[in-house]
Amino acid sequence: MIAGNYIERTLMGTITIEDVITATQGKIIARGQEIFSGLSIDSRTIREGELFIALRGKNFDGHDYMEKALERGSGAVVDREPLSTVRGKAVIYVEDTLKALQDIAHHMRIKRDIPVVAITGSNGKTTTKELTAAVLGTEHRVLKNTGNLNNQIGLPLSLAGISDAEEMIVLEMGASAPGDIRELCAIAAPGIGVLTNINYTHLESFRDLETIRRTKLEILGSVHTVVVNADDLFLMEGLKQSGYQGRVIRYGMHQEAEVRAVDIQLDDTGARFQILFKGKEPLRVNPKISGVFNIYNILAAASVGYLLGIDPLHIRDGVERFAGVPMRLQLREMNGILIISDVYNANPASMEAALRELVRIKKGRTIAVLGDMLELGTYAEEAHRKIGRLLSELSVDVFIAVGPLMSFAASEYAGDVLTAAKPEDAGNLLKGIWKSGDTVLIKGSRGMRMERVLEG
Image (cartoon, rainbow, N blue to C red; front, top):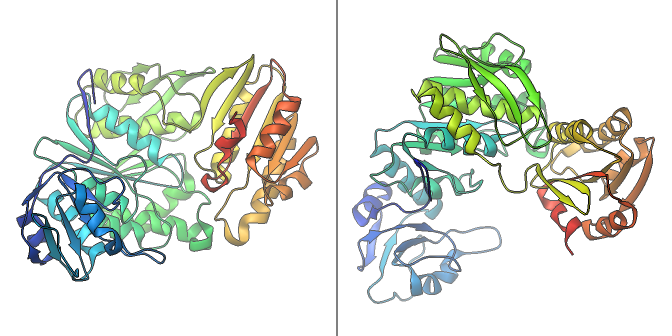
């Protein structure tokens, strides 16, 4: 895709069989094509020219689909010798296909001496990644994760797509357990890290907020420069305790920072504010995305642009061209009703931010259709009760609680409440009560599929 000077690339690299053998120390079982356009792990979507990586999982084995994958793909990497091979297709044997995927991605990355930016944190990773790619893309060819492929499988799949044309790489890094960020950094070898914030997410794996912080701060062991949210005092305390010796660029609104937002004005569909870069002229921006949390995402991206020498006017261009990420705080009007659809995911911090945005932009009644926040472990009940109390504090007019966990929120809510077992039921309830002039927020964890509230 080319928009102005912004060039976005996805999995369209050039991987040779020599790259694969060097990276994995594998053995060629069958000869065929020796140059591949990228990697694939899905026999249903593999494209001509790609190399199939036969991964194993708890409930699947990619080796069972190898022949189907080779109908369109040009080769396969396996850790179980196949009973037969497909004529004219390359087959490479390795000890472990997941490790092979990661090793190929690392090999392709270190072949290129270019800046790699790694972005992690509890909230805002994907939006910050997209904004950063937009800012850097005003002057350079940029490779980024496809969608939110940010784990031990998705990140190397994206990274392996690098070609000789790329000049910078921007990668989102997710974590569901301690050690994950360290592993991803070992694959990507980033030089610049971005830490957006620390909040309650994936507590089933992390147990407590301190473990989350320690896991996100694993990025410090790999980068020479870190960009951090100065207004997140818990994050900043962890950074100080870490003894990190690299360069630190702080961004924020309320604390002393090298990159700061001032003169902030928010409206329904965007914002206007000035970015103050230390030692440079103020930069006024008018982004298309709204919400205080998005100002932080913009500041993070602007900080990376500042670090990498992007012209401030081009930073503004990248920020103002960005139109948002699908399923994240999207606004639309239906029959005089303003819908805020933020259905990609949810945790306590993002839920609170979305509710405050609902109240900020309301025109008439406010209706919150909220689905369960998942993966919070033993904190789940209290987290949902706090949301119920927040709904009361914000004077939200109507609350539709979707799922068993949101029943805890409903029990704490002082206003009109309706309950639904699933999103489709919530949609029927909503259609029975909404009217022109209402502002409606729909939000919940990805597993709740809250986009189904508006189906039909």
